[in-house]
Length: 86
Image 1: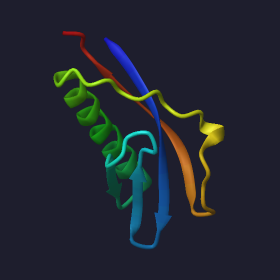
Image 2: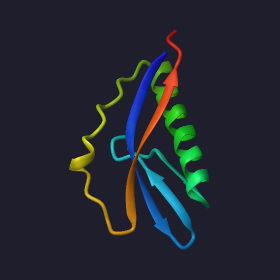
Image 3: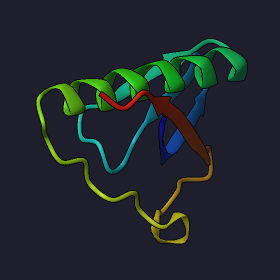
Image 4: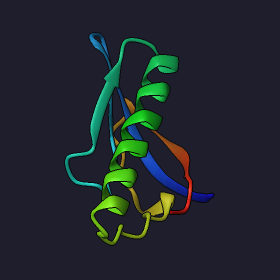
């Protein structure tokens, strides 16, 4: 198994929680609750990493958490997924 961990920005709003990965442009998801947003973040990250591996694309290095600027309604969560080696 190969483990991948990337920081995700959880943006809290009245409509729900949107999630973005600052290192993975276009890797976005959302959820109505924090639990759902966390589940969706793992799901979208898994799909992103899986497709990059299938296409032999190099993944960017994850940002250091302390370098990511946040708004007052945002939090960083580290999202980890595992893929089998092929």
